[in-house]
Amino acid sequence: MTDDPFPRLGAWVKLPAPESVELLALAGFDFVVIDTEHGTIDIRTMSTMIGLARGCGIAPFVRVADTAPRDVQAPLDAGAAGLFVPQVDDAAAALDAVRATRFPPLGRRGASTSGRAGRWGLEALGDYLRTGNEEVRLVVQAESLEALSAIVEIGEVAGVDAVFIGPTDLAVSSGLRDDDRSLADLVAAAERRCAEHRITLGTTASGNAPALLDRGYDFLVLGADTTMLRQSGHALVSGARSDAPAVGR
Ligand code: 3PY
Ligand code: MG
Image (tube, rainbow, N blue to C red; front, top):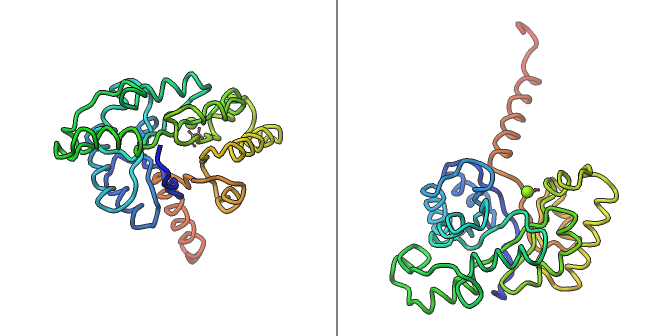
């Protein structure tokens, strides 16, 4: 567990194009989350993205689909700054995530300095193990009512660095609309409990980043490369259509 503050503003990378990472770094984001839960990014592309992010000075996180060794080992060996693990409903699931992603004695991650995380074999084994257990961050996603009510127990599992509330899956799994008042109250209560217990907390923003930071969130994912492209493309097209002379249309 590192004492360094969590990088604050991030973006999902969904397109299997390493250039997305470079563009988001130039845009000023502090971190990217390369999304292998949703989207079509393969291991080769994910590893290239991690190397590129490091070269551009932006922290590369990877959202894994699951905690099977094949899901977590490749991004960790490729030098991810941390992993986002979806659908962690209780402390037992958080402990599973720790066991899958940390070296012994905390977990059962396999060790090899041969990848980027071990500086291609240059890193001393002890430094590689320490970095993997103390500097690489494990973010678990709270995406159900069960997870919201157990958020402190989840966030306090040794080896977990932060909890991330996933508003879309939370709404879907609870059967409530994402603007439902009772859901908003449960989220606000979870935010307060995290603040009381000093649990690092993140979520996605949708145009409300300043309000969320005011409410105590430590880090936010502001959007996805796909959404940014669609929205700015749409704005350009509709601007051009509305400004175009009507004649001949
Ligand atoms: C969700 O909202 O379900 C997410 O996983 C991220 O926004
Ligand atoms: Mg989700």
